[in-house]
Image (cartoon, rainbow, N blue to C red; front, side, top):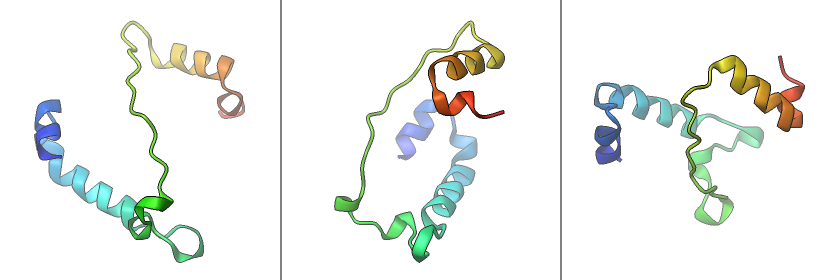
Length: 76
């Protein structure tokens, strides 16, 4: 993980990112379950992907999301 953070140029943020990740993993969800307590068989991993957004601004991306995603269309 540290090599990835270094490669992405986030070294100055490493302690913040690790603390944030720890908070996410430890947060109690429903029925007093947290992500840290889940076993490998209880996890569903999604394929990582990157969407190039050069040349777009946030308003344009929001408009595209609203046009093609029903959930996004309902959000402010």
